Amino acid sequence: MDGYAGNIVYADLSLGKVTIKPTPPDLKKQFIGGRGFGIRLLTDMVDPKIDPMSEKNVLVYASGPLTGTGIPLGSRYEVSTISPLTGAAMSANSGGVFGWKMKKAGFDAVVLSGKAKKPVYLFLDNGKAELRNAAHLWGKTTGQTTDAIMEELNDKSVRVSCIGPAGEKLVLFACIINEKTRAAGRGGVGAVMGSKNLKAIAARGDLPIKAADEAQLDLVKERVRKKIEDNGIEKALHNYGTAVLINIINENYVLPTRNFQTAHFANAENVSGETIAKTILKKPKGCYACIVQCGRVHEFDGETGEGPEYEPDWAFGPDCGIDDLKAVARANNICNEYGLDAISAPATIACLMEMAEKGYVKHPIRFGDAKGMLKLVEQIAKREDIGNELAEGSFRFATKYGHPEFSMSSKKQELPAYDPRGIQGYGLATATSVRGGDHVYGYMISPEVLGAPEKLDPYVTKGKPQWVKTFQDLTAAIDASGMCLFTSFALGAEDYADLLTATTGMKIDTAGLLKIGERIWNLQKLYNIKRGFGRKDDTLPARLLNEPLKEGAPKGQVWRRDEMLDEYYTLRGWDREGTPTQEKRKDLGLA
Image 1 (tube, rainbow, N blue to C red):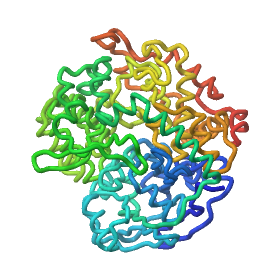
Image 2 (tube, rainbow, N blue to C red; image 1 turned 90 degrees about the horizontal axis):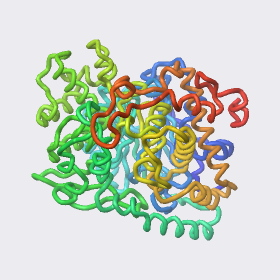
Image 3 (cartoon, rainbow, N blue to C red; image 1 turned 90 degrees about the vertical axis):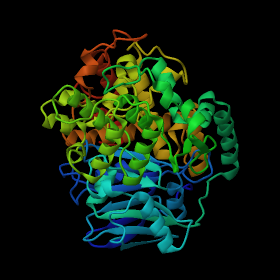
């Protein structure tokens, strides 16, 4: 098989020992790479009863066989662990260049266990791996850490994936940042890294990444390249970045505003992708092998950075009642520097804003207070003052003050930038997501709002369980492959199957690809059941089930869980409690 670097690094931080082993052929065949590798290795190695912050938890970095092959948008890697925010087995996805560099250094995956006595970083270098002292890096921001390691190694080709102060201080939604601005963002993977006294992983190398059938791969590459270049959504992402969605979602009256109290923001245009392009955009930027370049390099008032992407643009903007684009961009930059999830941080601030306005928490912050919002972001990252409480996430914060209903979260993870009351299938995908409040584990916005691959009525529930299952399984397979999810606007399952076949030499068709995705999904589900999750958790906040939207086309809509959940379970081969049956486990090789 090709497409793989061929080895996995096992770093026992407690012992200070690094072991390199060949990547098992069965792991490749059953789980492809990326998220598949991460979830398989995690669930094999970790007792489901452990605390996520325990040294018995592991952190798995894994690329996919399509990562770094030159395939358009083949740049991704996954970080898998048990989330300290949700308690679930999960993965966080990132792009940039690091995933490619990890493979060029000779490794498909890195498995990190134990806890170092003092801060360390792992250096991957052309087939070798070693732990190095990082005491001098502790306390530094992600940008400072990246620069310091590159200077220490005297090599600007090195790529660094690291945590900032938020990860060191165990903020439950701390993330991991590579190349200063690309984030493995959700679930608190940065807190797990911090709990292990691991500051960073640095990678360099020039080892070859081969394909099983180079000629066939070139043909498939050109086919997918043309599909991506001709796709209207991909063109919009290049021109306006992911924040092009601000106006689109707002015009559909499903843009969550002021902590999901409404779903339309009058001043949305002020923080839209179009306004970013007109005002603060310096140039577009892409990850390795990207032909879309949806990233936004911005510059204003002597400040430079990258973003904001759609989710933090919404979360620091409309969800906090703020229309000051520069404040939103600054908040996003702070998240990148300190290593904070730029969805959970602002969503938790929005929760505080509503509770403060209604008198449940004594704090001066109010919706629309951009200056106060910026102060809170830093307080969270440093765990200072009320930031220490907010660092636990909105669910724990709101519960502490007696009102968990103000946390707009699922499985304790803050919801992203779409109101499920007006997008029924998306609501089901989010509620049933095996990693908690989520959009990219099954992006139903694509058919229900954007019309890709076909336009669905977002207000109906009929047929949505089948769509959700298919999207979730396909996304798991895409995450395993190492491809960017945005390719799914233009590509179908057959394209990914053909890319994998030409690259790896394994014969993978559409049905086989979806079955691999289904296997990954069910493995996460089975493990999370052992962690205590069940039917009761496959839901959304009471506000979204009971309080109808009051404006626009979806006026009067609530999210209708009971019309879809049982059918979804049946289609998945699960019992009424959401547990995969023995027949389903046997079919997927998980018995």
